[in-house]
Amino acid sequence: TELVSADFPIHRLSAEEVRGLAGFDFHRGYLASADRKPIHLASEMASDPISLALVESTDMENMGSMIRSAAAFGIRQIVLDARSVDPLSRRVIRVSMGAALGMNFYQLSDVARGFSELRGRGFTVLASTLSDDSVDLQEVPRSQAPTVLVMGNEARGLPIDVQASASHRVRIPMGTNSPRSDPEDFCGDSANNRWIVDSLNVSVAAGILMHGLVNRRPD
Image 1 (cartoon, rainbow, N blue to C red):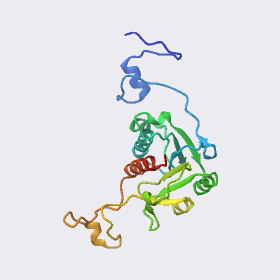
Image 2 (cartoon, one colour):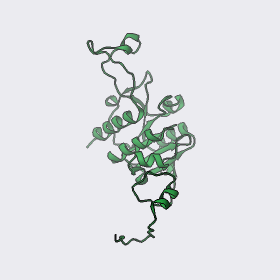
Image 3 (spheres, one colour):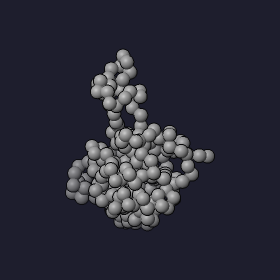
Image 4 (tube, rainbow, N blue to C red):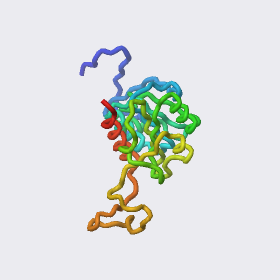
């Protein structure tokens, strides 16, 4: 088979050699080695219409899924804190279908302070949370300001100080508007249409919220 011409070296290896380089026998027969793109400071972010921030995102599959959804909605800026997993790890890249390689990543060391500083630059920061003062995304006033959607840890959600640093705290309504304080509603049943869960997987929630943001921005 003819190898295409390129401005970088291409090597043909045996299956055994490829397995040795990859460390496992699961690939499409192609491997690439490249320099990592640098992770910038959040202060260097451009004023994109929508950016995604991941705080304490420790599950590689969730991160990969959220990055893939972000790419599908035209989002190219991803903000990360120090506790999140490597966005260019093998599993994240695979789950994101390679979308992670096309993203611009930004680092926050002091997360709450960093979001406050972004607000000072004119960004709207939306924290996804189930807190009592969270509102439906549709209740947040539409704005031309660049927006950062913040998603937290799958189990713990967002730290309180991070929630407090946001412009708005938003949620996705679950089922009917049954009171959360009624324990019977948590069990629920289809006959009376009571809700049976109070939240979604973080990657599913991120996809819904990103879709909502993309489709609600002013013309």
